[in-house]
Length: 219
Image 1 (cartoon, rainbow, N blue to C red):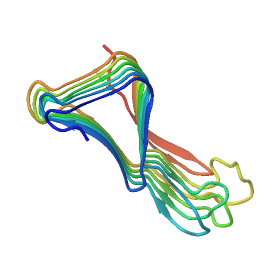
Image 2: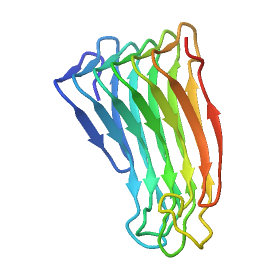
Image 3: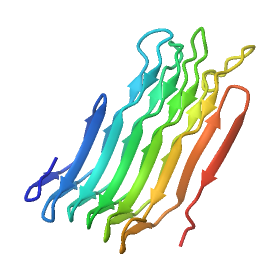
């Protein structure tokens, strides 16, 4: 957390991993964060016992009230949940947020991935996977997010059995979550993406896949 007169400079990669919350934000007109390499902010959650549901936390990157954040390379903000092949329960994606607000500025020098995916367990009882909320927001007025590479925002839900390819059983259900890429809420907001833009809210299971895809038109 960088306050109104603070700054932080990292020469190389930065990784933040939290349980319920993983957060990096700068707040105030002279607050800056510079990262010379890649950035990972993760609030992932993995199952630890049979038949126990698991819910990811909140991962967020925010530049507020005139603050600036610069990431030189790839950035990933992730709140994914999964029980995997050893556990059985349901999985629920968390909240992954990238936000510039009230004059805030975020510059990404490479690709950006914002993910709230979930994968149900694949052990004795196949679990359901429900995607969470993935958001990229520029709001409050004169807020800017610049992405020099591609943007992927995903809240996919995978039912147990889909990843492991089990046969002869009915897979768990997959429920897509919510994806929000939004520059509303005040005037002068800008989201600039040089590469491809793809947002997905995907429902997947062992037996079938249905999906909804939202794309921003490339300039």
